[in-house]
Image 1 (cartoon, rainbow, N blue to C red):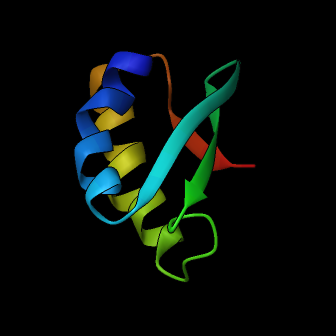
Image 2 (image 1 turned 60 degrees about the vertical axis):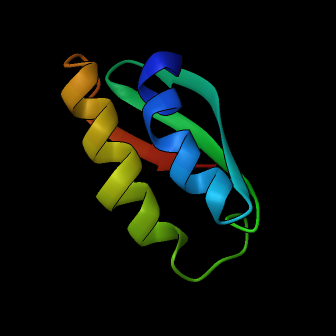
Amino acid sequence: MNAALDIVRPGIHADGGEVWLIRVDGSTAYVQMLGACGGCPASTMTLKGAIEAVVTAQVPEITEVLQV
């Protein structure tokens, strides 16, 4: 799971943000977005369009990524 997040981290870091895995519960991963991404209005698009897309492709047992 962290390896999948490492794929998207460079883009998130470039915007001044960070993403941490908080927990996995069944097929759902919960992440926390920090830094510039923590309060950004576009964070939902980043979460679903980038983070969730990469994680679900890299880790098939994860079907959803939610922000805590």
